[in-house]
Image 1 (cartoon, rainbow, N blue to C red):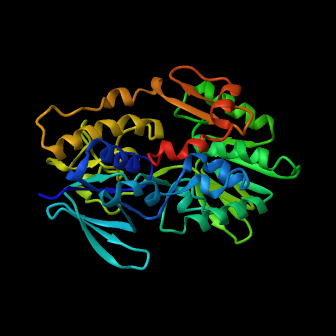
Image 2: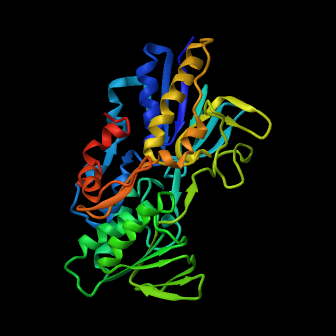
Image 3: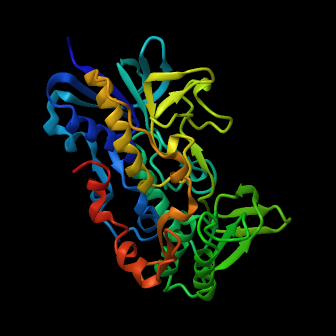
Length: 387
């Protein structure tokens, strides 16, 4: 009897950590892992705010890491397929993949893991700023193009005051410190910056940014964005109209689920799962299909939460592969949703920051030392299961 094939759709934090975990836990010829990803490289998107605002802060090879090379020592037990998953035949146990050249192929599986994550609206509106992995192997040119557009600007509007937007503005303040006539505007649809965190964390961020000249607009949504070629007009829900050289959207997560059967998704396009990470259709559990990470309906979509989820999925999938009758592990969804247990550092440039450690808002110097120093880029490979 040949090895069981586990196909993983998505080559970011969740998918790669599942791949590594399975290959380590299931030894010998029982297992073959196939990762399907639009790019041959893993993009360390946690550092995106600094990568995009300060092009010289890191070398590209520090945040764009070849996937196949990192798994080469597993030999034939691992395969990377570069392309887009465009469909799933659940009864037939196959995934349809379309390459960059338009070639279509089918990949068979015994077990399937959906880990394609989410995107931001920055890939749909405003200057194309890749805060998350997206698209084919155009990732590197997209990063360079965004870096050049941002570097050439003297005015910028940032839509969205979650962690990405706030971190990006903090980096811009340092990158543009020698531009006295530059202007930065941050738009928040909510009345608090960093709305997922404690109010004091949002207040700290706002005071820091405003004191350094950032114009913060709260409680109004972006309703329309117009590209004039050399400038952008941004219209708000209060009727206000703003103009800048560059508009960047950091608001709104979009599930990368267009290839997934509609029956597996909730109304917003996220994958429904049970506590064991099995995919749920409207009427049943899919015992051979799992989902993990940002693509699921689970709240608090962060890399830290993925670290909690992956061991549970790997344990259960290992038991499936080996055919054991042991009780399957369960993920505590309610504990994961507890906002009091959020752990998040939000640098405001390299010298300060805010965030939340359980119920505590950390000091600025602590955030700067822990994350603001290098956005953990020195640990990028290990954080993604590539080392």
